[in-house]
Image (cartoon, rainbow, N blue to C red; front, top):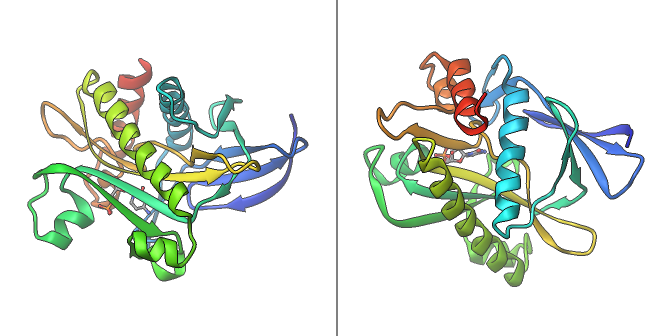
Length: 236
Ligand code: C5P
């Protein structure tokens, strides 16, 4: 399969069309941004780590019955994925209060939620990805009721599978963000990435942050944290 034109360049990835219209090639970059692009930097080796961690977790999720866009890892940074139209929602799943939830509700970071919290944000950089609820989503036709129910069901299942899997690697899954896409025949599949850029991973013994919060909050040891996740999940 050959790359043809670049379809999209985002903050952390480029997406290319291919000579087979059913597939795209994603290429992961080392560029890092935070706070809706206000903070910019580079995390050396991040692209390759996020590509490999994402593919590893996508395969695990497929095995557990969640359809994903993953097709084949081409190289350290490049992966073939199914071509989808992205549902314009970020689905945030939270087990432990951190980040914007801790701030919004006045909770101490690390407070365990009594049950899993699902949030939706409308994907729009200019608007700063505003939080929306099911009524907004249906009224704005970002997704149908059936699609949204399936997205919620898949998101909770992803949480269960990843939480259990990461526990064995001494990683606590605090929260994460998912995106879904629709293939040409209308099937909803998990898309985008699952990586230290999009998840909060805390060491389950020391509580140390092993994710992008090290970059967002200038905590230092950013590359080490990403490498530690790669090592714990893929044994490298
Ligand atoms: O910032 P906030 O606390 O709302 O983030 C919740 C989770 O969603 C974090 O794991 C964060 O990495 C992820 N997230 C993301 N992309 C965004 C917003 C949040 O990956 N645009």
